[in-house]
Image 1 (cartoon, rainbow, N blue to C red):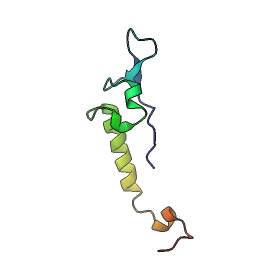
Image 2 (cartoon, one colour):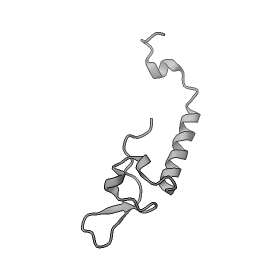
Image 3 (tube, rainbow, N blue to C red):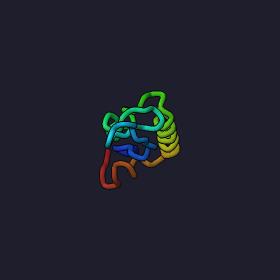
Length: 76
Protein backbone atom coordinates (compact mmCIF):
# COMPACT_ATOMS: atom_id res chain seq x y z
CA UNK A 1 0.00 0.00 0.00
CA UNK A 2 1.31 3.43 -0.90
CA UNK A 3 1.88 5.67 2.12
CA UNK A 4 -0.66 8.47 2.58
CA UNK A 5 2.02 10.96 3.61
CA UNK A 6 5.62 11.16 2.42
CA UNK A 7 7.78 12.87 5.03
CA UNK A 8 11.01 10.93 4.61
CA UNK A 9 12.50 13.19 1.95
CA UNK A 10 15.69 15.16 2.66
CA UNK A 11 14.95 18.70 3.75
CA UNK A 12 17.02 21.83 4.02
CA UNK A 13 16.49 25.02 5.97
CA UNK A 14 15.52 28.06 3.93
CA UNK A 15 18.10 30.71 4.67
CA UNK A 16 16.74 33.83 6.33
CA UNK A 17 13.54 32.06 7.44
CA UNK A 18 13.11 30.94 11.03
CA UNK A 19 11.01 27.80 10.59
CA UNK A 20 10.83 27.18 6.86
CA UNK A 21 12.22 24.08 5.17
CA UNK A 22 12.12 22.70 1.64
CA UNK A 23 12.87 19.51 -0.23
CA UNK A 24 16.61 19.30 -0.85
CA UNK A 25 15.99 18.02 -4.38
CA UNK A 26 13.21 20.12 -5.91
CA UNK A 27 13.34 23.10 -3.50
CA UNK A 28 9.57 23.13 -2.90
CA UNK A 29 8.64 24.29 0.62
CA UNK A 30 7.52 21.55 2.99
CA UNK A 31 4.28 23.43 3.68
CA UNK A 32 3.49 23.29 -0.04
CA UNK A 33 4.39 19.60 -0.25
CA UNK A 34 2.15 18.89 2.74
CA UNK A 35 3.23 15.24 2.84
CA UNK A 36 1.98 14.45 -0.68
CA UNK A 37 4.36 12.97 -3.23
CA UNK A 38 2.50 14.66 -6.09
CA UNK A 39 3.26 18.07 -4.58
CA UNK A 40 6.97 17.64 -5.31
CA UNK A 41 8.02 18.86 -8.76
CA UNK A 42 7.56 16.23 -11.48
CA UNK A 43 11.32 16.10 -12.08
CA UNK A 44 12.17 15.82 -8.35
CA UNK A 45 14.68 12.99 -7.81
CA UNK A 46 12.98 11.95 -4.56
CA UNK A 47 9.54 11.79 -6.21
CA UNK A 48 10.86 9.84 -9.21
CA UNK A 49 12.61 7.29 -7.00
CA UNK A 50 9.60 6.80 -4.71
CA UNK A 51 7.21 6.39 -7.64
CA UNK A 52 9.58 3.90 -9.29
CA UNK A 53 9.89 1.87 -6.07
CA UNK A 54 6.12 1.90 -5.59
CA UNK A 55 5.47 0.71 -9.16
CA UNK A 56 8.00 -2.11 -8.74
CA UNK A 57 6.43 -3.20 -5.46
CA UNK A 58 2.95 -3.25 -6.97
CA UNK A 59 4.08 -5.24 -10.00
CA UNK A 60 5.77 -7.81 -7.74
CA UNK A 61 2.64 -8.19 -5.63
CA UNK A 62 0.18 -8.23 -8.52
CA UNK A 63 -0.08 -12.01 -8.25
CA UNK A 64 -1.79 -11.85 -4.82
CA UNK A 65 -4.98 -13.88 -4.60
CA UNK A 66 -8.05 -11.63 -4.78
CA UNK A 67 -9.38 -13.31 -1.62
CA UNK A 68 -6.39 -11.99 0.29
CA UNK A 69 -7.36 -8.46 -0.71
CA UNK A 70 -11.13 -8.66 -0.19
CA UNK A 71 -11.14 -11.04 2.74
CA UNK A 72 -11.93 -14.73 2.63
CA UNK A 73 -15.46 -14.21 4.00
CA UNK A 74 -16.54 -12.02 1.05
CA UNK A 75 -17.89 -13.62 -2.11
CA UNK A 76 -18.30 -12.44 -5.69
